[in-house]
Length: 448
Ligand code: NDP
Ligand code: 2IT
Image (tube, rainbow, N blue to C red; front, side, top):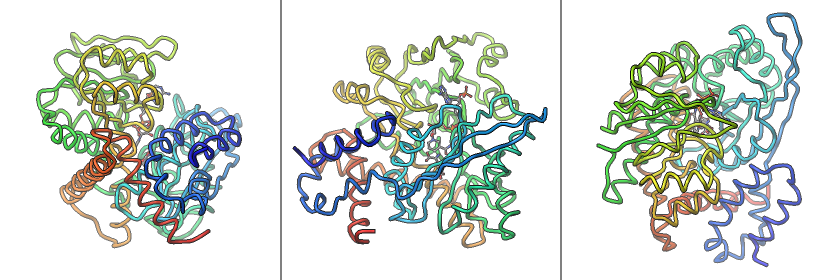
């Protein structure tokens, strides 16, 4: 039996209740076969066994009181997956679906994503099954304070640096930072990223994941004699990543015709008016449905039993920017039959493995999450640099650095794919390029 197959089989037995984690590992390891087979020393060093076991996994109680005086208990997590390249780094997700499997899949992906950025950051993830929807500002604050009352002992600017993810934006980072500062009685600006601009945040961090996705897409299309200008685009989600992906796509001359949230999607044949989406989502924290109530001619379609009506809309480019497994095989077939030419994964693991394979088999260009959405964490690392210098760069300086980083990431994915005769399979290219760096660093640091 091949080394990789053995590792995968053992992992399945060890992590039976963690389907998302197993899916993420499976997707990476299967693409590494041509690399690993050339290096018997990986097996001797138990490299893959070590790479798939987190360095540390913390689970903790988060109790908090709502506005009516009722007490709630949630579960908090932090997985410090691999710190071989730098301090642990990765976002926090607050969503009722959060469990150990979700946190581990995200942490595992983060290790390779962070390696691709070329910056000195290890991989981590955290969060809670807390549902921020419908909570008052004070409830959010009390939850964040309680969460930090435990998390603070595990993090630090040279130890582990959390940031945002689903359900955690600048408001939550503010409350988390305030509590950390209070507990530590020290101003360690670099302990969290995604901070407000008034207290150590970086310009362009808010835009970075969405903009970065489009920089990667621009490079991928260019390498295949295409361009974004003039293309029709659909974007799932209407949160941080989706909004700034939309903004940059529009700046590049694309027509974005649809966006969504977990309740449904809006279609606007004239092109999405992003200022209205920002008003609804960033200012009012409302639902995407309200877009169709405000914009004449826009059509709203409700999601039924978790369906994703957005993938029924005809487009040249689809950007899944909401959550994991939001494009399954059936939806991939629909997109392909509607003429989609490229997929850009803004979300983490938005495409199931059979859907990925279907896209690749049909010659669709696929920008894989761990490469294409790395702009967010890369700019977080730039925020850490600025915090260390006690200085801040202007927007254009950060944005230019981000553009270069994304351009380099695409070049690494392309180079690795070509080296192994994988054509335009950038999914494998990203995994191989990232693995190359992580494996070398792990071997260099010995059995720790
Ligand atoms: P936000 O919380 O800002 O937005 C999330 C969006 O996705 C919302 O529109 C939300 O709809 C939708 N969504 C979330 N969960 C589900 C679900 N289970 N089903 C359907 N829709 C859902 O998060 P972000 O924009 O920050 O994150 C989006 C994705 O991008 C995630 O996969 C995240 O891991 C990834 N990512 C984020 C980065 C960042 O810097 N923020 C960096 C790299 C990746 P609703 O409001 O109805 O819940
Ligand atoms: O998935 C991700 O890369 C993020 N949520 C961003 C993490 C970060 O540390 O900025």
